[in-house]
Image (cartoon, rainbow, N blue to C red; front, top):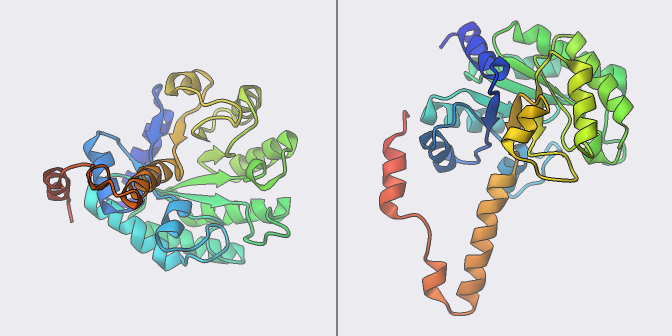
Length: 274
């Protein structure tokens, strides 16, 4: 599907009344399972991808090419729109961010997220002007061929400043970001303030505000247009694995050998478009 057509298709999912629930896959089988369940788009998770490779997220330990190959695989297997959770755009400069966006278009991605993170634990959030310039560069490179999400990580990097968060998101929208995202606002009031301040630009929420997990309907009532799961499906699966390993350590082979059947795995793999 040509880039401009894919852009329009993916954006339409964000602007319809019902919005979009966009779960995050971490490998081929999880992507096929989500597609089989009827989800209309899926995303990568930088946390989950890094964990599958035994690395840390947000510290530039995953390369752009590794993430592109991963995202491209999910797209080839499912033929669904894929949104790439691409950390800070994989580069020190706005030009590097533009190169990442261009590569994502070439790999057939439908969307890409650009964070204001730095990968530096001593100063995890980039200065305002730098963050805005990087999103501007992403938008300029995208040319309406791929949906650009401008994201600020204030709340998850120990900077609980709602005013600065809204300032950043508003600036990202002003330079052309298609979707806005600030993971884990403290509560529903903060979420409502964000949605109102940046309207009509669609807002993504990662599961819910920090204080309470809401339902999809409650988030939609608050004006949220896209709901993502980040690493939560992955850690849910890892939780099941940990319980199985505990059973195995205790000598309980039966409990450790539960899960979906090999027939179900084969059925999912058979729907692969690869």
